[in-house]
Image (cartoon, rainbow over all chains, first blue to last red; front, side, top):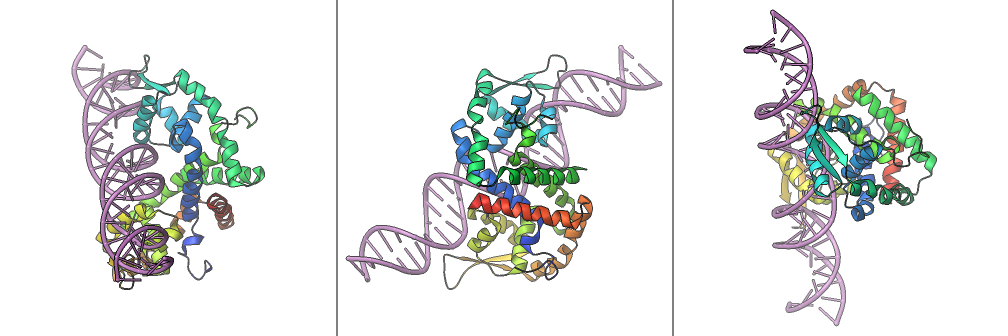
Length: 146
Length: 146
DNA sequence: CACTTACTATTAGCGTACTATATAAACCTG
DNA sequence: CAGGTTTATATAGTACGCTAATAGTAAGTG
């Protein structure tokens, strides 16, 4: 393993590479766990947001998830097709879309409660280390979007 | 901000959300920096790997970058179209593809040397914190692919 | 009130990124 | 050395995720 001094462009020393690789590697663990729920990982994150508060507009979801409306729009359509939410124009503001959980969508939360534990088991890391990682990542987000 | 005890599915408490959001947020910083080099972020990572060693096969690149051949195949074609590398069947093993930097590809490294500094400046975090983040992420990768 | 400006979501186009499948070369084993 | 298996890429299909451009609604202004 080379040092940064020798090669400032060494792949393994780039935070961005480790960030991208960690994101893909960890999300890959979710695939088999979320498959029985009929969700992809981004869809799971949208459901997490909606379980906290529903209805929400596309903008509100985008602000919390840090996703562009153009990304959410088709994703929400797929979740609507799956029967987990409805998409209706807001009555107060015809521009806004009210994204609302269906009873099926609300009920799915019960199954989802088992997800975090399964992932933690797969990772095999102590909770303190995961909590520390979460904190480090939050700092990176804050720095990047500042 | 709710606690984990209150809501184990709280979005902001999920490592996976912070991981995905941090990855997208940090990579977004690279876009304007890499644009003059004619590279996307995944393409930049491939070039980092090739600057370390060229020629490489698709499998070797996939092993280092943790990417599937199906992802690399079209990505390498785009880099070949850009003139940064050539794709030729290996003479010793006709199954393998020899991915080799062109002189243009080699020369691009000089411009790339300025990239990490620009990103660090944009993030505005001390190098020690970035190095620590890199270490934490490496631990997550190891745990996830174990 | 007409006009302009701002806001909200959608669409189009491009580039990842995955699984599953296909194809061809290399290998191994009887 | 023929036949099956393994290995190395490539392709098909689906789903993000972005920017840029669009359409429709709301709000502000003379």
